[in-house]
Image (cartoon, rainbow, N blue to C red; front, side, top):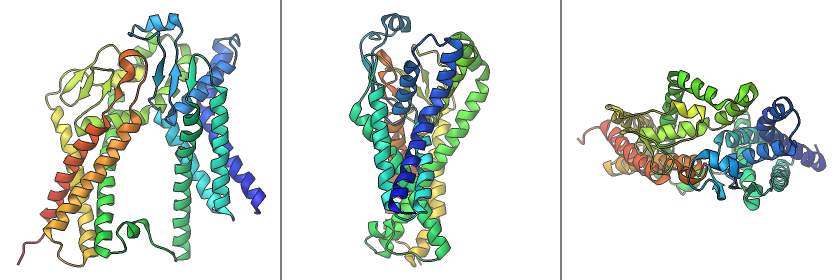
Length: 406
C-alpha cells in the first residue's frame, strides 16, 4: 500500500470512528423525530443534540441556556441563567478509545504506519472541529477549542494503544524486540529500580482494577435490586416507548461514571448528586435530584455496616502486594531489605491512588444548573483515601512473607 492509499485508509478509519460515535445517539433521536414528533421539528435540532452528547463524552464543556418554560419546570435555583455542562458520559469516550485501538492495530499492519497514524489524527481533528462548529447555537454552545482538541486526544490514546498492542503481537510472533521498554527507561536501566517500578505499576494498577471490577458488580446488583423503583421512574417520565429508548441510551453512556462512583463509595469519600448531598458508606443524604430512572438505584438511608466496604481496597492492596512479591524478589535476586519493600508498597499505594483519582476526576463535573454543578466524587479525596488504603495494605503484604533475618 503506497502513501496516498495509506492516508486515505487512515482517514476513512477516523471517519468511521466519528460516524459510529455520533450515530449511536443520533439513530434513536432520529427515530424519535420521525415517529413521535411526526417530522414537525427541524431535524438539525436532533443532529445538534447527538453531536453535543458525543462532544460531552470526550470532556468538551457545553454552555447551555434553557428555555424559560423548561427552566421554571426544573425547580432549581438559577435554572434560567446560562450554565456550563462539564460532566462527561464516559461511555462515548470508552467507545472512541476502543474503536481507536482497533484502527491503530489495523493501521499498524500496513506500510507507512506512522503516516497513517498522523493522517488519522489529523482527519479526526478536522471532523471533530466540523462537528463542533455545526452545533453552535444560542441554547447550546460547546467550547470550540475543546471540541477540536479533546475528542482528538481521546482518539489518539486509542490509536496509540492499538499500535502498541499490535507491535507486541508482532514481536511475539517474530521473537525479537529492539530498544528498551518504558520500565527500563524509568529505572535508568538499573535492575533494582526496574524491579521496583514494575512491582509498583503492576500492583497499583492491579489493586485499582480489583476495586473497579467489584464496583461494576455492585452497580449491577443495585440495578437488579432497584428494578421496580427504576421502572416506576420510567413511568413517571411519560416518555413513551421511543422516548424511553432514547433515555436508556443516554443512561447506558453514564454507566462507566456510575461504576467509578461506586468505587469512590467503596474507597470511602463517596460522591455527590448536587451541592450539599452525599452518598457514602456512612449514609446517603440527597436533596432534590432529577427524575432520571437509573438514579433509582442509589442507596438510601444510613448503613450500619457500610464501613465494611472500606475493607475492599485494603484487601485489594494486600492481594496485589502478595502477587507481585515473588517476581520482585526474583528480580532483585537477593533477600530484599525492608526499606525496599516498604518503599515499593508505598509506591503501589501512590499508583493505585493516582489511578482512581484520575478516574474520579474524569467522571465528575457539572450536570446542570443550580446545585447540580457539583456531581460526582472528589478526585483529591478519592486519590488520597485510595493511596492510604492501598499503600498500608501493600506494605503489610510485602513484609508478611519476608523471611526473618538469620
